[in-house]
Each structure stands twice: as structure tokens, then as C-alpha cells.
Image 1 (cartoon, helix red, strand yellow):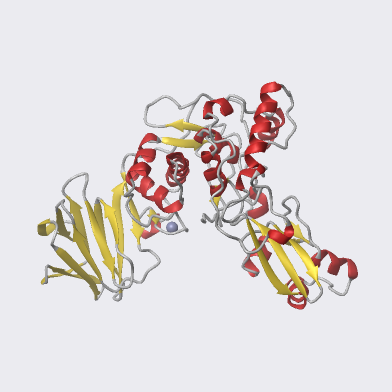
Image 2 (tube, rainbow, N blue to C red):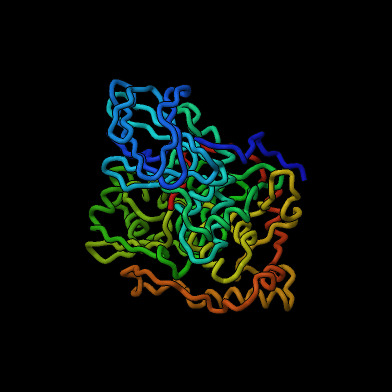
Length: 465
Ligand SMILES: [Zn+2]
């Protein structure tokens, strides 16, 4: 397979603006065992051998950074860099009003105008990926971090230029990817290391967009129902793995008057018309829809601050109750669904291709692809197999059984949403056993080949947890 990957050496360092949502008026930097040098304006070493017990205070003044080392003022500089002496180095940053974080490798500090500081972590790309995996997902099993690392690495390689105009590659919040500390968990480091160089590509070998969300509510969304572009690998798929998790369901109540009034005022709907009124207060989504009376559900979600667009409306006289499923935009990977799939022992590559239909995991860096291109597969127990046989039926039974404990709750059980850890129904079953029984769906292949076009990314991708 020919890989059409941009000429980015993923083993290089990247620049990530940290504390990017905070207005940093002053910050303190401290160290542990390893030593750092402090370099001003990229040439002058103003301190070296900074280690445990030393601290540096930074404050903006007249578009420069005032540097104080161990209580002694060193001067004002346009740029101050903390340069690490060895590969294992990390430092602690404590901006005023923020919780302390630690980051590996180098730190570049500049003034943002006269009042605030900008802090950029110049870090090994793979260390960044591990830090993102730790920030973006939770879980007990290491494979969930491998899944997240592959998604995050793919996203980062596709979006290296995202903050080019700002002088760095990425910010550390959901605009790019959460990166709220260096990776400190050994199991996450190991998972990221095992996935070294693994990325997701489409049938043509291009890196794919890898949007993800907290919970699909049982069905993911088509890309064009949320954003502008129809993307071949971002199709709506059944996702029973997302049932029974923290963010599976939600409810919200509004007065009927307010709910109907909104459609009359904002969308010019005639709420005095019985059929219009009826549809608005009794809207049902057993399967995901894109609109309610012609109004995009994405608009409703934004205006009413809803967790998802996957909701039905129930009428109770003077109030309406919205009963919703899932959390997030619903496109691409459902993180809680993926967590569940890992718990069930499903292979990380099968989890990724379940959500990014027809994509492939390949390993970059001059090594062989992890797997050869093959027919896209997907997991969905309620789809009819085209060539039903005993193995296929076993697989369907297994997935159905695994999801049994997590069926959508009945209406009266919807509130309150409580945290629960669902134990897999059949966790003893081996990964390879299931993987070998998965169904290849001919129709999906045909659908993909007819709609596959490498649509450019639209503005408005939101990566949220
Ligand atoms: Zn950003």
C-alpha cells in the first residue's frame, strides 16, 4: 500500500502552548533531579545546572519577561527558554491561580503584551502523544490508551500547522487536544510506546480525521449531519457498546411555552398549527435524525446547551421533557464505547475500524504496516449478516450477550444519571476469538467505494470529551 503521509518526521519535537486558556500574570518554575539551563533570547545562558531546590520566577513587563532565579533578578528578556540537559528531564510549572503541572523537555516563555505570559512546551512528539492519551481518556486497561494514542497521533500529524500563525503547533485544550500534564502513568507510557508510529489511514493511504466524543448514545452520527462534509469513514454506526456507561443518558426539562416559543421566534415556525406543535412536543428519535421540523439538531443542541442531538421530546402539559442519549457531537469514536469494547477484550484495531469505517491502522517509520489492507469490518449485532454461518452467529450472540446488561434503560429509569462500572458479561472470551469471527459486510464496502472522496477538513471540528 502506498502511504500518502505528509512529510512530517513524527519523531521530532513539537511546540504545544500550555495553560493556553489561563491568563498567566506570574509563574514559578521548579525542578526535580535533572538539570536545566536557562537561555535568554535564544543565545545567552543566564543560569545553568538548575535542579531540585532551585526555582525561577517569571513576570511580564513591557512585552518582556522579568526573570528571577532563586530570588535574584537576572534581567528582562524577550524570550526565556528552559533547556533540558537530558532526555528524561521534566520541570514543574505553577502559574498564579492555576494548579501545578509538570512537562517534559524544554519550555519557552514569552510575554503576551505587557500583562500575561505565554508558555510553550517544546517536547518530543511521542511524549506529547502519551500526555494527550492520559488527559483525554480514562480506564483501567492499557489498550484504551493505545486506542487514544493512535487517534491523537493521527490527529496531530494531520494538524501540525493548526497554530502556525501563533508560532507553535498545538494548544493544550479541546480546540486541539487536551494535554494537561506530562504522562506520569507507566501503563499509559507503555501503551503509547507500543503504538509507536501507528496511525489511521483511509483506503487511499491518507491520514484520516479522527473526531471523537464522550458517548454516542448507541448510534454514532454521520459527519454531514453535524458538520458540512460527508466523509466516507465517518458514517453512522450502531454502537451498543456505549450503553450503560457514565454518559449514556440524560434528561432536561423546559416549560412548553418556552420550548415552542423558541421555534416560533428563532425559526419562524407556526406553533399555532396543530401538526407543527405536535411534532415539536412529541419528537421521537429511535434512530438519529439530523433535523426537527427543518431545524438542524446541532442548532438546537447549541441553543439549549444539550449534551447531544440524540434526544426525544415528551409532552407533559405545561412542560416538555427531553430524554437524550450520549454526550458530544456523536461523530467518529465514542470514548465510552471504546472503553467498553476494551473491557470486552476486543482488539484495539477492531475498535478503531468499528468507529472509523473502512480505515486501517498502519505503522509509520519505515516499518511494515501492522496489517495489510483488507475488507472493512464492523461490529453490530443487530445487522443481518450477508453470509450467516455458525461462526458469524456465535459472534452476534456474543456481542448481543455482552451488551445485554447495558440495554437502554426504560423511560422511568432515566433519572438521575449515575456513575456505574458495567462488568463485561463474558470477559473471559479471548480477543482473537472474537476478531476472527467478525463479520465483513459487503454492503459497507460498496457504500464506501461509492462515497469515498477525500474531503478537506471543514472549520468547526470540535474534539470534546
Ligand atoms: Zn488549538
